[in-house]
Image (cartoon, rainbow, N blue to C red; front, side, top):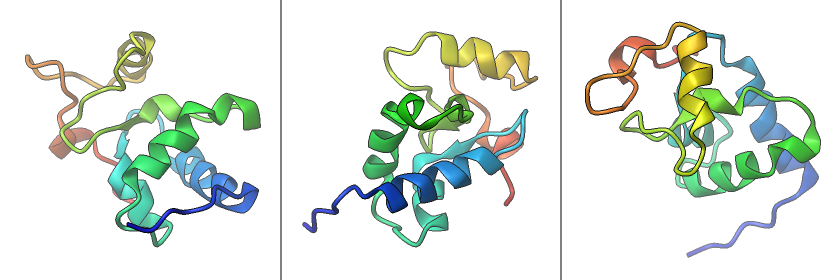
Amino acid sequence: MTKHVLTEELIYEILSVVAEIPAGSVASYGQIARLIGRDRNARLVGKVLSMAQCYGKYPCHRVVNSAGRTAPGWARQRALLEQEGVQFKPNGCVDMKRYQWEY
């Protein structure tokens, strides 16, 4: 397994993609990783988003896992998404077919 060094450039590359996600849409960690050319680095995206507040204001609440689950331990994420019109399925996941960002 290859370890990637988390550079400022890589952090801002990830955050610039997150900044593009429109209100009312969501993207998955893997989708963002693919968009920056790092298909297998969804966890790296998650790591960057966990410290995004150190780099400015980004709509990190619009990033969920591939099943549409919100981040564990971040109860406010669902409320932020609902304020933007994103609806959740009975299982508590975002309906990815309906709300996934088409970049």
